[in-house]
Length: 478
Image 1: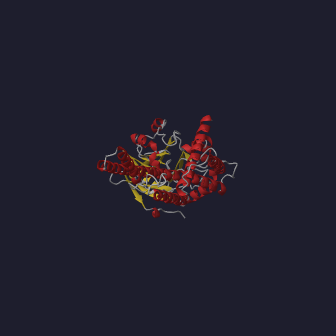
Image 2 (image 1 turned 45 degrees about the horizontal axis):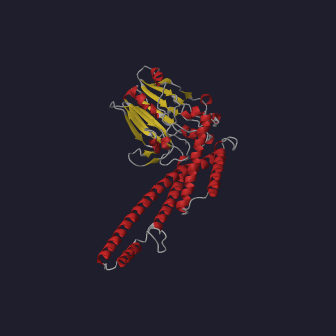
Image 3 (image 1 turned 90 degrees about the vertical axis):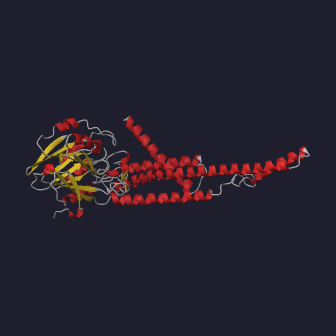
């Protein structure tokens, strides 16, 4: 308990410090108030930020503050965590501007220093020439000439050194630099506001249906193609409520497929009322192969006992380190599901029970499909001849910058090798879904929520191939 309290205290302190940094940066760059903040203003501002975050977190998270599973609760969570997301984005903007300002200051100092040296060198050279050419009949006259020459050198020093009254003057480009920093700050704030609005719109848009043909030689005996749909990471409880889940179920029921795979993080936290998911999930259409689920790390955070009970009441087949087999014509499809290792939220890569799990796999020849919430299982799956892994957990990073490869650059790449899309290792293939829900920041930018659909078909040339198909070609029921 003490660890949790210390962790939360550290996080709260960092959040308030980030907001203080943004406030002071806007004051400095946008309003051009470069004087230090007084203690009185600092104490008032920090107190205000503390109260603001206390009220915001209570409304967004505390079940006693607003009614559970209501639009008001969801709106409070979206507003507060969008605010925190904007603060983090503005921290990056102002850190970059601070670095630029420092570099400009350094350049200006170097220019002024070099100009000072050159001006003084020229003046003293002139002084030396004056002394050599001056009459030296009287020592006093010579001394006076030398003094006058030095004074003349000081007068010739560039204006960036001293004003006429002897005070320090501003460099010639000083105001231009401040104007540049001001409008760069305004542009940064405007860009963050625009991206946050776009991110909110995309995050709460309907999930797109991504379709693929998965061709494998082990499916040569299929009598008909097998179609599988995958959803993952809807995180019921904060940004995703029971109304959203019912809407997702209606979307799934409108699609024709033989099996549904839910790869974890159905619930969000210990404060999630998991029982709210039961009526919606019980509305899923039964499928020829079945509706399957595995547990993700957040399902354990929400409470493993109540998560398991809820999923069982929902009519889903929960695979916990288990395998099931389905026969289609002369081909077997083995479906296995493994519990999330519950390690570190990002870097947990070890699956301590994977050895026992893989030993329990059916020995009969067939296509092995593994449901794993965390994608880090791929290397182990590839070593043990698992043919197809479906995974989630990463959300595609929720923000993808369209640069580099077709995959783009996901911000999740900072912490994870696997971010979204297809991956191959040896003869294994993995699809990592972007998911349908959200966590921490309610934004998605160039990373829309998705339902993945895979058409399992035999490979005529003996090669393992994945072919993207058109979304609009998916058959709808009714």
